[in-house]
View 1 (spheres, rainbow over the protein chains, first blue to last red):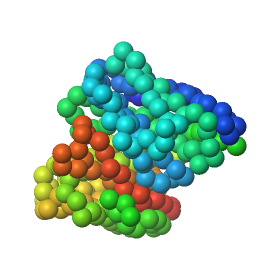
View 2: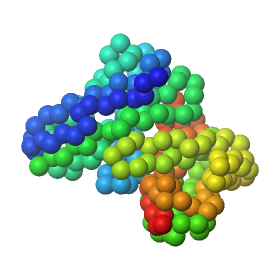
View 3: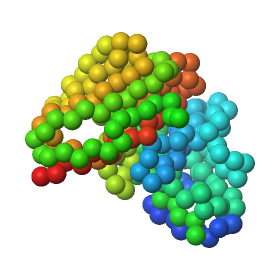
View 4: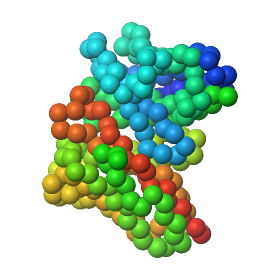
Length: 113
Length: 113
């Protein structure tokens, strides 16, 4: 079946603009995660959705970052008033309700100029 | 200081040599995973270990989870150029919400032909 997909694959934006990044998880997966990866480093957790529960937003670096998940499926990560330090690869992952394994999408490379 | 420390950060070896990557923490994890990531792609899960002292083998790759579930190692025998990539360990801490993963900083492996 189809894996996790993300769009766009690359995004270049000017400092101060808002951006939206999209994630389509694996069908049937109830858990969805967003991570940020800077220049070949490890991943930094941002936010976690599980079913209809309130999301775990503990990893969001500032109030410029927000995310929503509509209909328990597609998720959008929004970054308002982008800054150069927001430049990174943003990765989305999904997992089955009680599974340990997370399956990652290819990521969106965000460059803020 | 990262919760999960990986070492070394970079490893360059010749085809046919063996290598070991370490993942250490002062915290206990309920499970630990190893991923490999290639440029422009998301991490791909290699293995999950859940029992202290557990050893898993995947062809030429051997994964070990420490007895106290605070550390893990990945050993590659007779490395091939196709083993080149960024290796990431990631753990689920005890009582972590959902299966939120904490990632190590990664080990970049280069296997030269």
